[in-house]
Length: 179
Image (cartoon, rainbow, N blue to C red; front, side):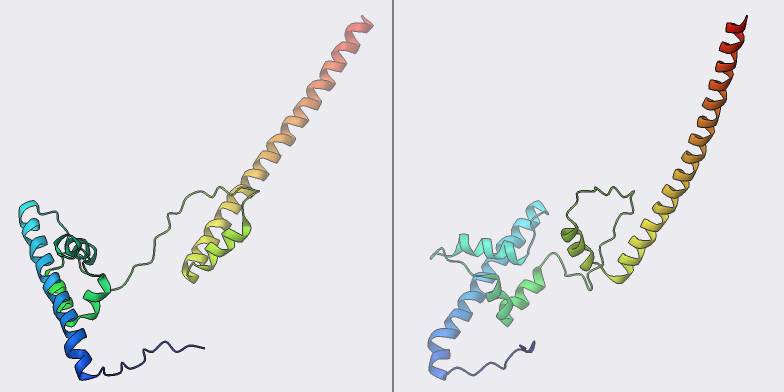
């Protein structure tokens, strides 16, 4: 079983830090600052431009002379670049993702539905959502049962009326034949 904790990062040799990693970090910071500044200016003009990781990545590809740009992970892993992005971003992350509200509607369940797929969908739901769904299904079942009983009563009533009408008709036929 794998551990969910990150393994501590090993320190790179000083010469590798100076010749490779530090120039890459500085390039990332510079590209992020250029892209964010450009996006901030655009936002001042049109007030709809978003400053997000995706827009920064797209802008760095446009502005980079090499045409490479940077990846969003480069921003997230570079403290200085991330701080600059965070200072200017337009959307903040929600503190806690709210559970999806399921709209309670009448159930239409098809007989030939894929039960395995439905099962997988139910397994993703929280306990509260499952309880609410069960209560909804029971409510609909009770309504359908009441309708079923009402329809059976009406059907029986109409059958009795039909039998009475048929017997009266037969009586009328027999009385008219005798006359």
